[in-house]
Image (cartoon, rainbow, N blue to C red; front, side, top):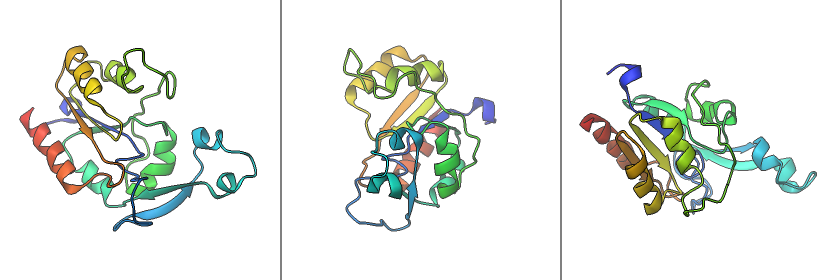
Length: 179
C-alpha cells in the first residue's frame, strides 16, 4: 500500500493523545508539558496563574512510533491546528509537518446537533477512506458520515480519561487491513 493509497488517520489531540480527564496526575508512560497554544491563551486572563503557567498537557512519547507504524497517512483534526505540529508532535515523536484540517469556525453550533468538526472533516477528506479518533464523536456523527461520505470511514471515540490504548491501535490496524 503506497502513501497515496493509504487511508487517512485524522487525529484529535485532547482526549486521544492528551488524556485530559485522567484520574492520575501522571498516567503511566506519559510526560507532563505546560504549553501555550494561541487558541487557549486567548481565552485566559493576561497575567493570571493559568496564563503564566500554560496549559497542562500529558503526552506519551510511545504514541508517535505506534502511529507512524500504522498503515495510514496521518493528519491533524484538532483545535490545535498547525500548533499540533510545533507543540504536540515533538512530545509524541511525530513528524512536524503533518497536514492540518483548518476549521472554518472553532466550536460552531451545528443546526442538526452534530459535533462541530464533523461536516468540515468530511468535506476535507473528500471521499478518501479515513479513520477519525476523537473524544467527542457521537452516534449522530457516525450516522452523518455514513450517509454523506463516499468512502469507508471508521469513527473511533476515545475516552478522555484513558487516551489511545493498545486495543485502539489494534482496531485501527484491523480496519485498515479490511480495506
